[in-house]
Image (cartoon, rainbow, N blue to C red; front, side, top):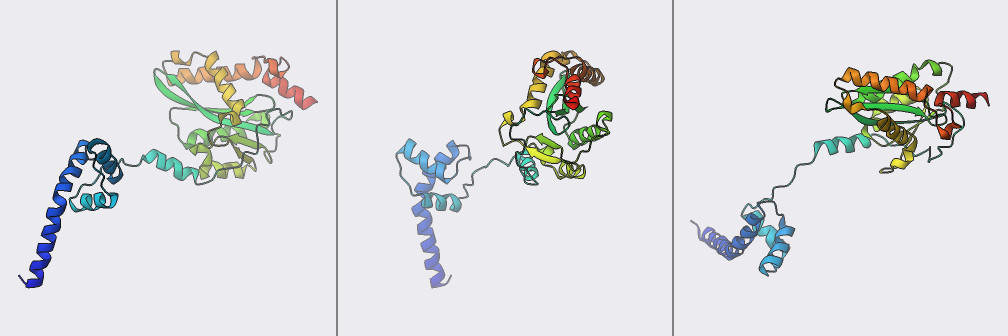
Length: 267
């Protein structure tokens, strides 16, 4: 070994010995934290539990030197997907809680809720006319995928009652869920020349008409008694017909949604 190499080894050896006692203390705290503590947590635990004040830079150096690498939680892939999807596009709240509308087929509200059959989840997507309260489209599925909302839009487009209605300038309002920020949904709404509006993040009241409808639906039907998906679908379809044509509502001048729709159109 060369003279310079010897002195370099000696210097490194001295530094190793100098850090070793501190390493033992740091490692004790690190092991007590089951390998999940980063340098900040180690510093705080050293101070609170052992009364030792150690500079965070020194703790970092010791942890790096002796390979004390904290186990960190992996990022939730579903949150990452949701975040990326939301980054596709969100829209201004153009509805702005103006729920007192008097022109049918100009302002729609849409959302997804869950139901059950035989203790299994099913997902219901609904589009509701804000002025009349009429449900203009719905789709029930075992899966909460993009087909759920896309099929609901297609059913809305093919609704016989809307055959003479121009979709241009109809506003459709939703929350900022990943279905409604997805480019597939956005492009279909755009192709229909509809105006897209979204609730502010975390403000379910911004979409109160559809939230209120879901509340009534879950109060009115015993969906938990359904044993099969087909039984649940039949129950939902029957309820939608009842809601539109037979369920009188005080807030609609004691009319059903369809009756109130016709009343508004005749004004």
